Every structure is written in C-alpha cells, then in structure tokens.
Image (tube, rainbow over all chains, first blue to last red):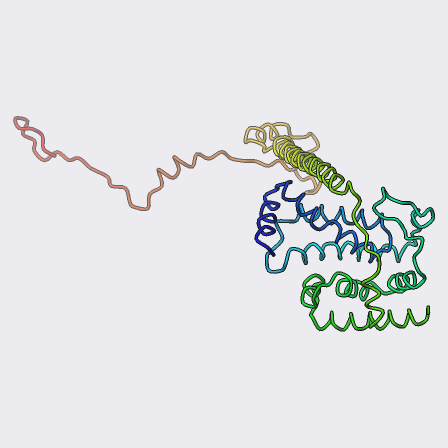
Length: 179
Length: 133
C-alpha cells in the first residue's frame, strides 16, 4: 500500500469524506467490473459496488494494515457477491435489464457485435459455482496473486490453488461443450 | 490455457459517470439514519429505565407496605366476633401480637457483673468530728 493510500485510509478512519471520495475514484471501475463478472448483471453490480463502498466507510476502523487495502475492499465486494449469488440461487430473479437490454447512461452498452465465443465464455463463467468463479475471476481477470486471493477470501493458499484449478477445468469442459 | 487468455479479453465495464455522487448521497442518507437511530435508542433506554423506576417505587410503597406496631394493636382490638375459646384452630383468625420492647434501656440495664452495693456505716458516734463512713 502506497504512503498516499495509507494516509487516505487513516483519514477515512477519522471520517474524512474527501479521502473517501479519492478511494471511490480509485477503485470504482475495478469493483464494478469485478462484481459484473461475478453477477452477470450491470445494475446489480453497480448497486453492490455502492454497498461495498458504504461498508468501506463505516467499517474503516476495522481495517488492519496487515493486508493491502485493495484486498480488503475486494474481500467486502466478494462477500456481498456471495450473498447475492446465494439469494439468486434460491429465488430465480429475472432482471429487467435482461429483458429490455437497457443502456445505463452510456457507461455500459452490450456489444451488438459480440461474438458467439465471448457469449459462450460468459455463459461458461456464469455456470461456475461461486466457490470456483470468484477465485478464477480474481486470478485470471483481476490479476491478483494466490496469496492476495487467499487473504481476500480468508482461505489457505492451497485451497485457493485447488479451487482455481478446478474452476479452470470446469470452464474448459463447458467451453468444449459449447464449441 | 487459451480459454484463460479469452477470459482476459472479456469486456471490462466501468462505473457510471455519476457513481461518486450517488455514493456520497447514499453516505449522507445512511449517516442521517444512523444518527436518528442512535437518538431513538437513547430515548428508548431512558424511557424504559424511568418506567422501571416508577414501577419499582409503586410496588415498594403501595404493595409491600410494612405494617407498624400500632396497626397490629388495632387489629388486636378488632377481634372478630366469631373468635371463641375452644373453637377449632383452623377457623380462628390469627392476630399477630407484637410487643414493643425498648431494647436500648434493656441492654443498658443488662450487666454480667454483679452490681456493687455501697453500704454506708457510721464509724464514729462523736458528733464533734465529721462523720466518717
């Protein structure tokens, strides 16, 4: 964690909104993208991202600088995503976005020229159990190391390695079925 | 793995342009809600404590009123007419009798040591000198 970020975190712990705004600016795109890859729904990803940052502000006093601040934010986002995915499994939710393909202020537009391959990859990723999807996304899309992912998900490194390996195998099988 | 390279090429999305404003607005709302909740909680606790205190006082003063000795004496006077000697034990009204004892004087007069009695005896019958005892 850089010195600037350390200082920002310290100020957020004291309730400084300006410092909090800086953190939001730094991480908003990463968190929204991460949650979009997990949930598959843009509006849900934005709502969960807002909730993530609320928790960052109100629980900043609980952050201990033994892990990077980014790991802590992604841990909060992961927990919210897990809860949301569990809820979605119990109740089949159909989002209006899926029906109407709405475009939110130009920030996200579904690519009309999306190739079948990308669609297949998205579907294969969505079919993965969250237990495997989350570490695969963190490793292969967000670029976190195994140790960082272990800190985010509070699991041993060996477990993370195994889950990533299984997740990749499942993805491969799903893609081969589709292609 | 080729598929993993494809994962990296999946489209990345960005946050909406007004994301920060929305987050700050939500933050402001949550802070207000938290303040109101804490205020209501404090008032509730104060109210509950006041109610408990009132109930405690009422119970102690009116329900568990302690009867003085005079009350028992009055009771003794108002012996019900159906109380007769020889009547079955269980049908009698029992009147508690309390004898008021002044313990302070009782204790003062109580002494384990034998009392010393001074007997004054005239030694001399000569009235010209002072009477010696």
